[in-house]
Amino acid sequence: MAIADKRHEDVLKKYDRMSADKGRHGGYGGYGRDYADEVAEAVAKTHPDRSLEIYRQRVNDSLGSASLSAYETVGAYLRKMRPILKSLTREKEWNQLVTDIRLRHRNRPHFIEILDTLEGKSIIQTQRDRR
Image (tube, rainbow, N blue to C red; front, side, top):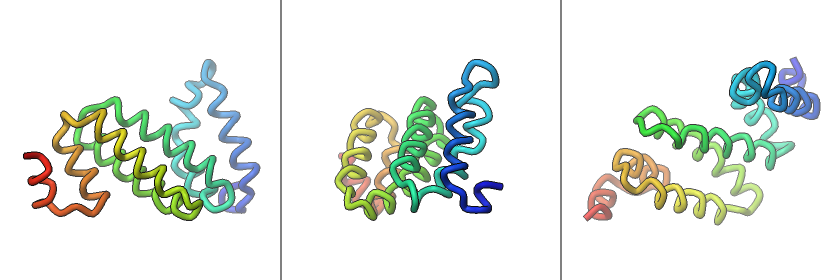
């Protein structure tokens, strides 16, 4: 309801409570995670740093898995983060994040292709870069 009513402070308070309640209900890995995407999207304009924090956590959670669906999930979160960082004139931070991820996971060719797509590289450029 707080999301629908655009009561962003209340949304964040409830989310923080759910996230902090790790021991009893699974916390961030439980109830809080279920709402993380909704919360991040809802507060992106009014609380961009909190939105980015949530998206970063989701990226980190997804990077642990070496599967195509995890790569696509990371790509989706990075895609959501870029305009927020751009609006804060912190686009270099997005570039650095992608560069760091690219370096850490350079042995995952399908993932690198997804990152290339995010950066606007064509398939031909991606293939040239691999050589």
